[in-house]
Image 1 (tube, rainbow, N blue to C red):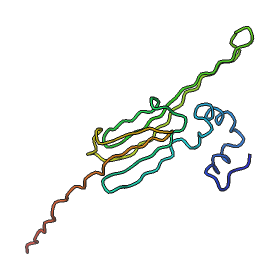
Image 2 (image 1 turned 120 degrees about the vertical axis):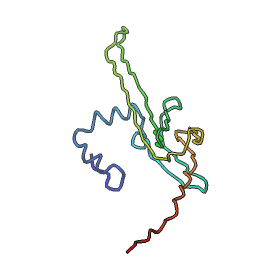
Image 3 (image 1 turned 120 degrees about the horizontal axis):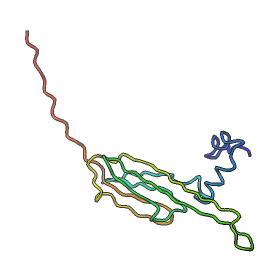
Image 4 (image 1 turned 180 degrees about the horizontal axis):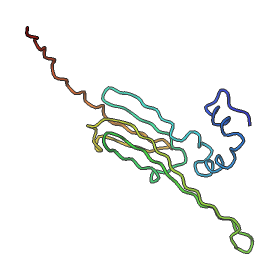
Length: 148
C-alpha cells in the first residue's frame, strides 16, 4: 500500500504499515466505507450563536448521545455488530462481535443550558445550534494613589 501523499491519511497509511489489515477491516465493518470520515466537524459562527456540524455516516439517531456538563458538550456515537456464519447443517462455524464508540467534546460556555442547544440528525450529519455565551462585564479599573 502506498501512502496517500495528497490525502488525509498519509501518516495513517505509513505508520500502520504492515500491520493495517485487521484494524481497518473492523472499522470498515462497524462504520462502513466512510469510516475515515466519521466525526469530521465544521463550526460556523452566526450573529447570535454557533452551528456545529458533525459527520456521522452509518449511525442512527438512537446510537448518538449528547451531554452538556460544566460548559462542555460531549458527543458520543457507539454501535455494535454481530456476525454469524453457519454451515449447511445450521451449525455455527464462525461468529464475531464488534463494539465501537467515539467521543468528541467541545467547550461551549458555562452559561449555556441544555434547553439552549438544538440538535438535528439528518442524512448522517448531526447539526447543533447553540447561542454565544454572553460576555462578562469586567469591573472598572480603580487607580490606587501612592502616598509619600
